[in-house]
Image (cartoon, rainbow, N blue to C red; front, side, top):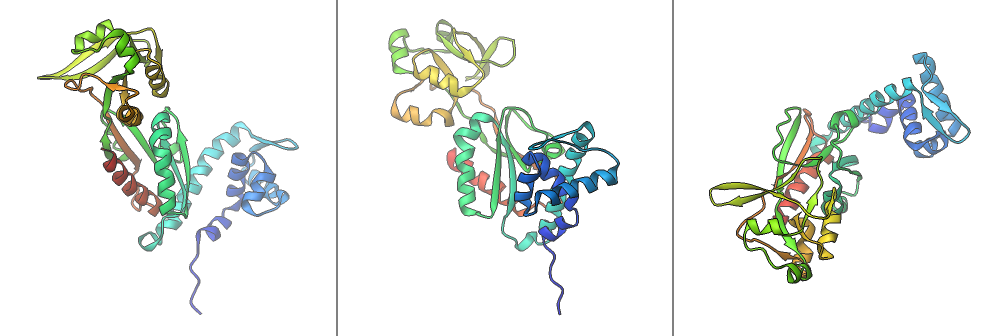
Length: 308
């Protein structure tokens, strides 16, 4: 009789104490972890107790309805999560050449880009690949893909040269100066970059220094220091302020495409483009890239190509 091919669930059975521990931490208790693993709460508790006995250290503080990490548990948890992720990738890579994309895909993306673009993109990706479960982390913090167990990240930057990651450029981050018709009727329409100095500029707050808008001019670039009565550290807020007629905003085109078509925001200085950065997709270097990651990379390249 031919030997049956071993699958990922059997592989995890061999390290069930580690899996039970990680699930108890992430789900907040033994009962929730048991439901996820298809075990009883007492079985999960015994697996974790066995692990603590082997290590000679207490990993979890237990209460009636909740568990929390000890100092040793916190350190061990980060290693366990990486180990389990690598085991899953190793099992999936065995049949990577003819396998459908499947499993958990963890994606990190900037907050606004995630809300406006990538959330819908991830939903469309899942419609094509229903065996993939997506965990989308939309945050402006710079995540460590390897340490935190992310499969891919989308980043906005001038350039990315991190040799520890595979970097794919998705698209330029096109930006535009715009304002509402009501603001322009009240304050006039700027016709040159210098005119911006007399206008209320809606400033993206980044640190404590002065804010510069970089503009493309004949022969190079010009940095223009701008100011105004309103600033924020979120482009969605600045878009809303522009729609309310509070000033001129410098925003990504993907964020105001509908408003520009509807005329609720008006593009300014069309002959003086705003200098944008790049939108990049990155993922860890691996000899065998899981099918879910390869599929998502290709999907993103095509999706951002259509947005250019």
